[in-house]
Length: 188
Picture (tube, rainbow, N blue to C red):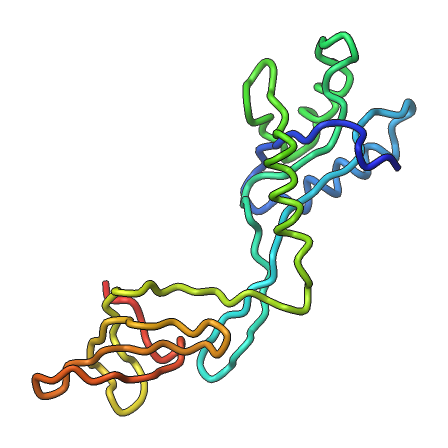
């Protein structure tokens, strides 16, 4: 299969049905009597590690664009007109709401955009990115350990080890405290 054939388009799908839409398109393509120029369906994902209750590195898969699927296809004929067979084929797939980038004449992703997305998804699977949910300067409440129920301000984030360095006010003095991600919670 030619990896350069077609252009990448974004399909809006029902939320949570991205995998089902990909399966529906692939199944319909196999059942189609004439070959349609739909080459590849991609759901960009990344592996993230979460830190929960003493369980470091709970690895989950997170979608970059929930509710969207990328499709590499020839939606336009060489003369620039819309290929209605492809248009109605994709629009008729269960779970597809429509194309993004124009309702009547969708615009494909630029090569720079698709290169960036493909580069992000091509990172090694073994190395999961930590799911960082805290920011430097943010106030958090400590929910476990010797300083339980104290508030602290995030000063450093060590994503590799899953730890935060907080500045906690104890008896009127700022004290640095190192805790794991799961030991703190965002202030409401």
